[in-house]
Image (cartoon, rainbow, N blue to C red; front, side, top):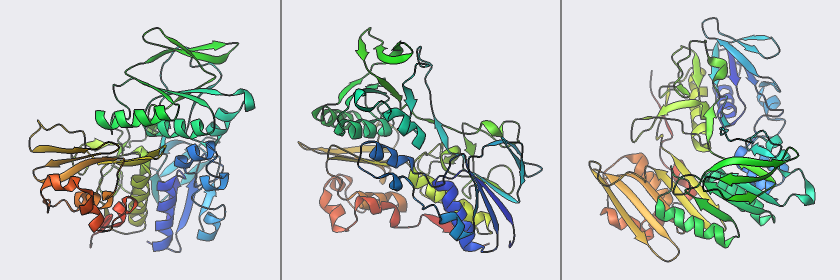
Length: 428
């Protein structure tokens, strides 16, 4: 395996961690990382903190500028892949150059979804994915005071909180009946909505923005589906992402929303892998194809892909959703499938409500498959450990709502994925 030419497209966590995994296993391999960014290692999850003044700009990057040079990784910045010839093992860049490879990792991530709303061509309409997006949103100096966010998912809610703390007048519109509809249940959504309103953020659910208004080409407000008009100077779309696969059309790579991969992160072509937000993987609980576009998944998938590209035989484990957020002091953590209904075969739901907290667990045939913790997230690491082990619960399910069980095991919420196997090294 020595001396192989490894090509990685994308410099997010999947691409960077894959490059490091290759280098660790093969000190002599040629590694070329192609990225549209000026600098590799940008952490999009930190953008909201920087915009709110809670983090300096250097914290936006999870690797320092000298990282690649120290690792012997060649980086081609400001470069976009526009076509892949999977059979010939080459990619073509936007400037016409062709890059050959022995093994390829596609880690091109995803791009924000833009809604077909009349008036969206107005100046002042943005999505948030890159540093340039964050900088553009904040342009306007002291005259910029009012911002509306379309979409009540995690990114939109975090951004609303950070900008509200900075003094902006914020409003969030979510077309579904609850916030973060794929993750929260109605009770969690109500707790979060109440906390946001206490922080002077206006929130409306079950409404849809049908027009973006403008004056002299610049955003002046939005019209929602019940006819009301709200005046705002910026509109931020935060309604999810779509995998970046356009350059793969005609390549022969199977596309199914994103790129379906097996548990070794392999595509339908030998020596071509995919990882991160662009990849479609099997949910380990439902076995459905999912685009698990979260940081922990991207970093772990990248490591698995990199090790296998360098000759290893590793498989990706515990592929389920996990999200954590803190909004004006309210901590919320959700994992797995907490919104499956009790009328499904073998599904049982247990909840515990107190004045400032809400705890919910969902089991299937005696095994934990999902939970939501709001206000009190103690024991989250223990619950994650139970989900990963895929064993019959050692307690009466309702007892897991008692946070003392989790505290007994001394596992903090952020350590959940550090206890137990993250991937398996199979012997050849």
